[in-house]
Image (cartoon, rainbow, N blue to C red; front, side, top):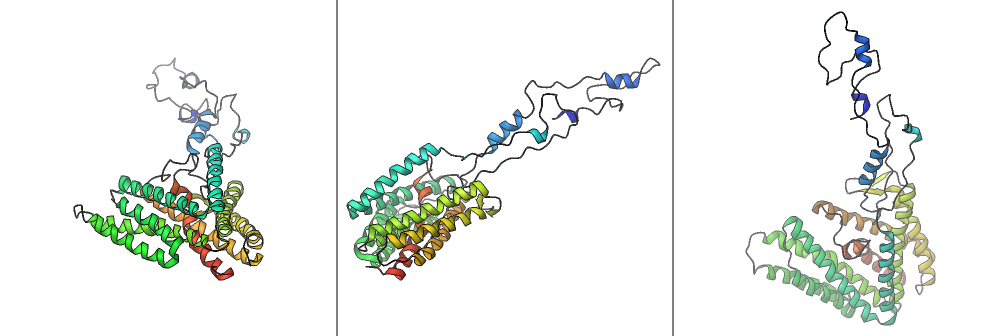
Amino acid sequence: MNDSSWGSPAGSGFVGPDQGPAPAGPAYDGRQAAQTRPMPIVSDVPAGDNQDDHDRGAALPSGPLFRDEPPHEHPQEPMSSPAQPPHAPSPRQQPRQKKSAGRDLGAAIGVGVGLGAVIIASLFIWKPAFVGVIAVAVVVGLWELTSRLQERKGIRAPLVPLAVGGAAMVVAGYVRGAEGAWVAMALTALAVLVWRMTEPPEGYLKDVTAGVFAAFYVPFLATFVALLLTADDGPQRVLTFLLLTVVSDTGAYAVGWRFGKHKLAPRISPGKTREGLLGAVAFAMAAGALCMEFLIDGGSWWQGLLLGLAVAASATLGDLGESMIKRDLGIKDMGTLLPGHGGIMDRLDSLLPTAPVVWLLMVLFVGSA
């Protein structure tokens, strides 16, 4: 409650809420009573501190666009009271609050560098090792997704057939190509249906539906990364796929954090902005032109522009898709395995839907060999 709710300027004849009726008799002076009424107790804390504390508590962004939801400044509203303590700055003199990244950037950078080293080493030293990295990421991602579904919605998607079938799907895609991946996907879906039959029938339909969705969403889409790896210049194709997705996320974060004002999808992810999307497109197209020109055999810079545009679109949709899932589940992150990032699924959200897009465009531009 501010000071203006306690009284009006002297001489108005206002009687405070703690006072009784004015005493009767000729000795009573209404103006004197109005001037000597009890004043409310004012805290010694300077004005503006409570507002800062409120801002610090409220400014907890769920991440900038693509982990990314840019924090916004909280402008301070002027107090309605005409009387302010002499030490309180006027609303125009209130210092502007600095923007914050909203996460532990040190931990995020450290984890990102560590993951990047593992990926690069396995990718260029021995291809099967990178296939193993994909399989491990798929299994952990399935564990996070099924755990959150059971905790928040009571949906019991069977993890064992999903984990076994998901890892087999990735290996089959690398060894037998797209046909092997489709066969493994069908067998995994069948295994989910059969495995769930060992439990009571209540909730069977929603459990198996969630299981088939999880099998398609995580391991099947990840299989396209293994398909990229099968080409002669497979490591370079996978590296291009990873670089474009990361650069798209980074461009969206940087531009959205600095210039973001117009919401992209406020009902799904309030922090994502149209300016951030433009940043993602610009960064990804520039990186795509460089990668296709210098990394991919037979590639051209104009193909890289189209590839970068497609990656920015698919990465944005993938991030919004998982944001939709997390909003439905009522959670901020899928897990806590990666400090500064959340869980494995919080890192795969942009990568998974982008993998088939990059694979298809690579086949159209330079072939599958």
